[in-house]
Structure formats: structure tokens, C-alpha cells
Amino acid sequence: MRGCDGTLWPSLPCSRFLLSSSALLALSSCGGRQSALSPAGEDAAAIGTLFWVTLAIAVVLFIAMNALFVFAIRTRTFTLDPETARWILVLGGIVLPTVVVGGLLVWGLSLLPDQRQPGDGLRVRVVAEQWWWRVEYFPEGAEEPIVSANEIRFPAGQRTELVLGSDDVIHSLWIPALGGKMDMFPGRETFISLRPTEPGIYRGQCAEFCGASHAWMAFEAVVMEPDAFDAWLAAEAEDAAEPVEGAAARGRDLFLAEGCGACHAIRGTDAIGQVGPDLTHVGSRESLGAGRLGVTLDDFATWIAHTDDLKPEVEMPAYDHLTDAELADLAAYLGGLE
Amino acid sequence: MTRPTHPPRPDEDRREFSEEAASLWRITFAPVVWAGHFVLCYGIVSLACIRGLMPIAATRAGLVAISVAALVAIGWLGWRSFRQWDTAPDRAANVGETEGRHAFLGHAAFLLSIISAIGVVFVTLPLLLIGDCR
Image 1: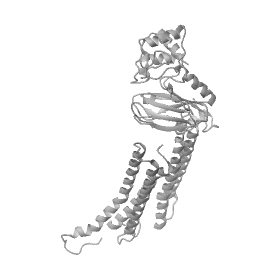
Image 2: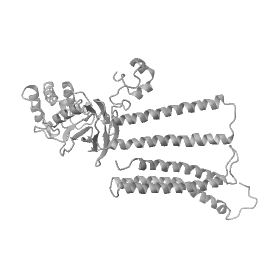
Image 3: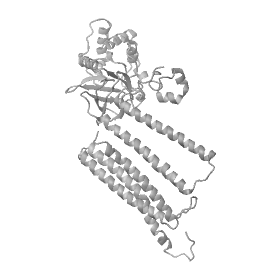
Image 4: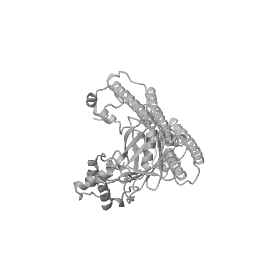
């Protein structure tokens, strides 16, 4: 089980932890990759602290209320005079909740502007589609974007601006381990900025129901050391590598012959479609089908042949008429696009 | 409430309820101010931020002033209601006793002004803590 080495209760052995309470299990979600409780960035850490303090207050109030309840029905041997009772009601029923909720509200609201701060240079435009993500990187000063899809990479320790939109229905971008979330509307731009601190691969998820495959609309959020990020972005800006011979070359010919390029773009080839995700460097990504599968060659073949099973109502037709050999060639080509 | 000692008169109801008609207005006043303040805040901020009809700094200052006015209005009403409750001859003297109509309406209006004031403050907080449209 992944993530039982999480930061919540590090001293507890995994099995004991799992048995201890299903509620705690749900709370921890037993994995840091998509958990707001395992923050990997400044923004998520702030939200995490707010959560734990809110939880602590709630637990204290719950215990105190139950203690009072037991006291009132079991232990109490006297009658309060009406004036005292009234003050208990006013202080405990009006003043205390107002102050506690007001304090948490002030704290929570004061966190919001932090996630709207200007970034340190990099701007990423993310446009949600049913059910995937267009991703465009604008390094500082860039006019033209570096186009990618279904994965957002961040330089660690820097604040990255995310400009969000949607092409069809309302979606929402949420990377729990890094911060957020922020809704994405057709015809409107929204903005959020995140400052991840821990390099690693986290998981983002559409957080607004957006149709049949909403649950499968995810992505990998990759936080890299700044130098590695710069190298990766430079590679991402390049055209696709041209396969010379063998399976990959056959796969490229098949890709073009099957008309894949009507929907997908692979820079440096005749494939310039804009309907589906850009595949120029799909082989270097951490997932396929917007977080649906891994990126082994088998995953590529499975995805191409069974899109509608893996992602109900997805626009891309399943290419189940291709032979296994053809699928393997396509997989070799796409997997090689690093 | 005292039992009538005379035969009914044609305008008796109107006279008896004339003051309570004002009470009924009073009881709705505070929540209406809260609701109006809420709609104004959301509507005007949307016009400023989404439509760009006016600068957000001036909008914010104007809405904070409106919030203060709303709180003053609710405070005044709350005081009136408190007096209506506190000085009512039919106010319940002890816990468990029935409250007369006049005292009850004042009491309810007073409590509603408290919750309305809290509502107005909570709606105003984003204006104070989030400085711009982002």
C-alpha cells in the first residue's frame, strides 16, 4: 500500500495504522501523491495547517459538548439559576461560535491572496477539455507558448502562475499536495499561483463534475529542481524526434495513414490537429489519457485500442481494428516521442 | 393579554394590532438589510471585477461604507427591538413562562438583528482581507 510512510503518523507500523481506524485511513487517504494532508508546497502547507487547527478545535468542542451533556444528565445535582443559564446560552451559544467561526474565516480568507500572488516568471496556461488538459508554458518574456498536454511541470521553490480556462463545461483544477483549487469556466479566465517546494510527482484531478469521464480527468503534476526543469522545458520546446527505421518508423507512417494527425499535433510532422492532446513529447510524460494509464508500450497499445472502455464517452474512437503488430508499432513510435 | 370586558367593537382588531404591524416590519428589517447588503456586495464586485465597470479600490471603499451603514441600521433596529422586548409589560418574568405577543416580537427581532449583524460582518470580511479582484 502506497503512502503508509506518509508524514502523518510516521511511528505507527503500516498494518496497525490501517487497522486502527477506517476514518483515519480516509483522512490520510493513505498516500501523499494526491493528499492535501501531505503538502509538498507552500500553499498546501498553509491550507494543511488551517485544516489541522480547525480539526483540533472541532475535536475539542465535540469532546467538551459531550462532557457537558453527560454532566447535565448524569452528574448534575443542582439547578442553575435562570440568570446563569441565560449567560451560558449567550456566551456558549452566540459569542463562542461567532468568535471561533469568525476567527477561522479571517484566517482562511487571509490565505486566499497568497495563492493569487504574482509568480516568479513562469506562466502556465491550462485549458480544460472533456476530459483532458491543454497545457501551454510561457517562460518569462515568451510570446509564443511551448505546447504540451495532460501534465503540468513546476520548478521547485518558484511561484508559478496558472492561467485557467475551459473549452466546454465548467471544470476545476486541483493539485491537493500543492494547493488550490480553482474553477475553470468557458469564456472566462481564472488565476492561481502555486509554489511547490518538494520535487516529486503528484496527482491533480478535475474537481468539478464535468461529464461521464470526470473521474478519469486527472494529470500528473511534476515538481522538478529548477535546473532540471529548465532542461526539460528546453527539450519540450523542440520538435518531435524523427524515427529512422524499424517499429517506430512504421508506427509514424501508421499514425499519419490512420488520420491521427487530424486531431493530434506532433510538431515537426504533418500532424497538426488541435482537437486532442498535443503528442509531440508524449513519450516523456508520466501518464496516458490524462492520468488514466501508465506509459509503458503496453499502455499505449491498450489506450489506442480501448479508449471508450477506459474513458466512457471520450471523443477519441477506439482503434480496435488495428492488429496487435500495428498497435505495437504505434506504441513504439509514440513511446519514443521523448 | 387581558380578557376583554366589553362587547366586540368594529375597529378593535385594527387598533389592537396597529402596533404589532410595526413590529412585523421591524422583525423583517434586519434580515432584509443583511440580504440587501449581500446582494449589493456580490453584484457590485462582479460588475467591477468581471465587467470592469469601476475601479476595484473605489468599489471596495464604497462597499465598506455601505457595510458600516448596514451595521448602523441593524444596530439601531436591534436597540429598538431590545427596548420593545425589555420594557414590554407582557415580557416573561421567568424561564418557562409564556411570552406575550408584543414582547415576543421584540425578542425575535432583537435576536434576528444579532444574527444579521454577524452575517453582514462575515460578508464584509472578504472586502477587507482580499484587496483586489484576484
